[in-house]
Image (cartoon, rainbow, N blue to C red; front, top):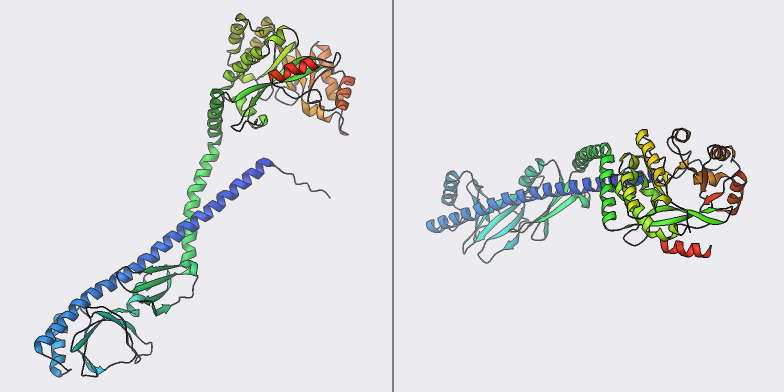
Length: 507
C-alpha cells in the first residue's frame, strides 16, 4: 500500500529550523552551565587555598617568635619551664593554633598543652633553603586518622611545627558548597586526601595553586549539576520563546522589509533582466507574440527560481517602478521586431496593485510620445491579488485601449475573481493556466472546463492562449478543442532578445 505521506518543503524547512534551534539551545545551556559550574568549583578551590595561605603566613610569623623565645631563654629540651613558656605564648595569642616543638635531643613533642612521644607516619613534603617546609602527619591514634599538614622550620637545636591545613578544614568549606560533590588534593605531586573522587571526570575542575604546592580537583555534585543545567536551559528557553513569538507576530513585515531591500538592491545593481517566450499561432505555424518574463540573476550568474519571490514582488512597493523598467526595456529590446511585425504583440504581466497606483497610464503615454511602440503591448492581468478598486482597473483598461494596447486575463480560473472578472471587465483575450494544459491528457481530465473557455472566447470575440504546452499530443488536443495560440517548451523556452531574433529567423 503506497504511503499517504507527502513531502512538504515548507514543513520540512520549519522542522529543520526548529531542530537546529533546539540543538543550539541545548548546546548553549550545556556550555553556560558548564562554564558556571567550572567557575563555582574553581572559586571554592581558590577559597580553600586562600585560607591556607593566610594560615601559612601566620604560622611562619608564629614559628619565628617561638624560635626567638626559646633562643632567648636558652631552652634546649622539653622541660616544665619550656611548657610554661609555650603556654604563656598560647595565652597571649589564643587565636593561633598550638605550635609544636621538638628538640634534637628529645623523642618528645613539646607544646603548651603538654608533651607526648613523637607520632609515627609523618614525613617531609617540601623544604626550602630557609629551613621552612611542609610536613604531612597521619595521627594513627584516632579512628579516622586526622590528616593534617604542618608548616615547619628547623634551626640548629629545634624543629617548630604549626598546623596550616587539614582535611577537616577543607571539608567544612566543601560542606557549604551546593555544587561540590567531592574533592581530591595533591601536595607537591603526592596524593593527600580524597573524598567522593570517583565522579564524572567531565564534571570536575583541577586547580593548581599559584603560590603553594597544593593541587585541588573539585568534583561536581551530579544532582546539583543537572539542576543547574535545567535552570539555565529554562532561563534561555523563556527569552528564546518570547523572541520566537515576537518574530512570529512580526514575521510578515520583517520578511517584506527583507525582500524589499533585496529587490531595491537588485534593481540598482541591474540583477534583473528580461526573457521572452514565443506565443505561436498554430494555424499558420508563425510566432504571434511573446510574453515578457522577469528574471533575477544570482551573484554566481545563475537565475533564481521565479516562484520563490514573484508573489512577494507583486505586492512590494518597488513593483510599479520595476514594471515601468520592464515596459521600457522590452520596448527598447524588441522595438525593431515589433515595428517590422516579426512579432505582433509583446505581453507583460501586471497586477491589480500596480494598476491601482494609477501611474502606469501617464508613463505609457510618455513612452508613446517618445516613439516607443506602446500600441503593440499586451498587458496580462494576473489573478494572484484581489481587485480593491474596480474603477481604477476599468480606467486603466480604457486608457490602454485608447493607446492601442491589449488586455488579457492571465491564468484564468486559478486565482481571484475568475468568471466575475470576465463579466465585469473588457478583456481582449484569456490565458489558460499551464495546470489545465498539463491535465488535458490525464485519465482524470474532463474537457468541459477548457471547452467552456473556448465558448466564452467565441461568444465575446476574444483570443484564447494556452500556456505550458510541452508535448505534441497536448498541442493536437488543444487544437481539437479550438485553442490555437500556444505557449510552452514544445515551441521554445524563454529567450534573451538576441536569442529571440535568431529563433525568429529560423522559424
